[in-house]
Image (cartoon, rainbow, N blue to C red; front, side, top):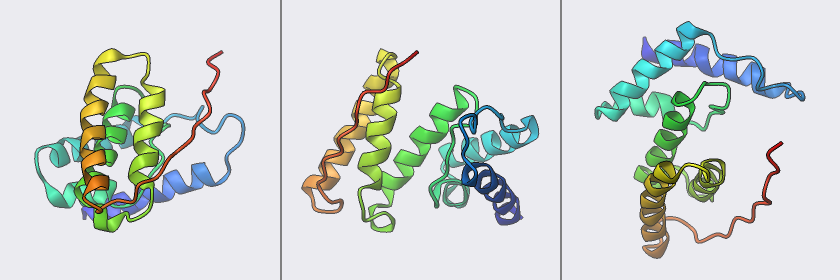
Length: 143
């Protein structure tokens, strides 16, 4: 049942992100979907492996979700990738970490939390479970 629901959520996200226009992030996710995703995220954070796999097993674009849910989902995605390095052998973890760190640069509490995940990322790179990569990101202008 959860799989069917998440298939619908992923289909909705795929439809929206496929046709990215200048305002592709302007349309927020419906409140019912937000509640459904938030409930699954809570289960995943509580240790439900199936909920985590359904929510984070494939990379999704969480940008249409409101804060703080967006941050929680993106952080959860990074945690899942770090916990399952064999499922994401490329630079996915590094890319997620770098994007989150850049976006949250103005929030010292979130940056500190992300730095802890960065330490776990570096440990996986040192152990050879994740490739060592360098992600160069240009600073984005905030207008």
